[in-house]
Length: 312
Image 1 (cartoon, rainbow, N blue to C red):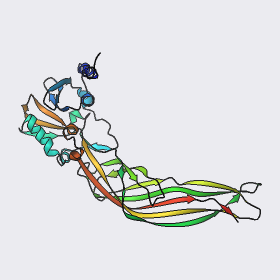
Image 2 (image 1 turned 135 degrees about the vertical axis):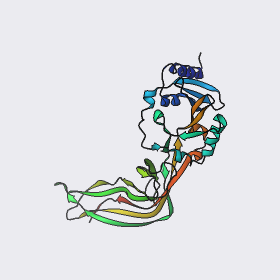
Image 3 (image 1 turned 180 degrees about the vertical axis):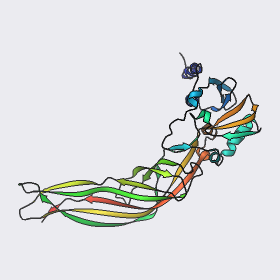
Image 4 (image 1 turned 60 degrees about the vertical axis):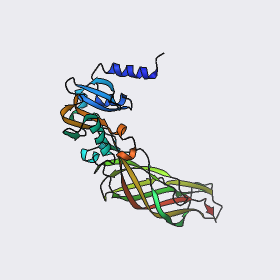
């Protein structure tokens, strides 16, 4: 009986017989593979474990690697300048120093020859929860709507609005040092408002630039028809209540670096000139590869509640 690990290694070995895109290779490798060297003589990727043990060699698919892959709406390219502002950048540099030396080198992200596995900055899939500063200020008012006969049997139909809506503009008060000027999709969570709504999640696009604005809109208001029998000589009405709440809201968006940083040496070191270090597997604490953008705004919401009609 073969173990799963044996089958995994066997699968990797089989794939190494043909040229492999960098993106396919990195998806198949286990998490303890933290850096990859480029053997420019044999045109192979050479994968190593954290302890320096050779894991495997894989031919380069030059045609595939020179093509840009489609970016997710929540991700953008990570530049060298942004990477060097990571809280954990010194650890990445120290990793390169310890494994490949301190010789003359340049750092590169998203090299033109290996675009299939980029260095990216992504908005995490966690919902950005709004928080309110103080208690909301709410006002309520009621409106009455008269009905009209729907036939000869004395029935009256009255349409009223029911549901929740908000449309608020938020301003970025502090931009992240990652993803500068990028416009990425973010999920914003709106908590319960004054005990009259349930929490909801809204998707929006945010540009990571100081003082930029974005809208968070949600509207589930719909028409509700109340039908009643009108006694002869009576007028029927339906009462609906609108509760408007205003509050100061704020939130923070996590921008997270992911992918590969290339250290390109002028002289061959440890058998190669070019080495790619995996940001995720070296900086295992998300905070070491994160930066936050803060935003705030004056949120306003309307909650419409329909009441049963009366005839009098």
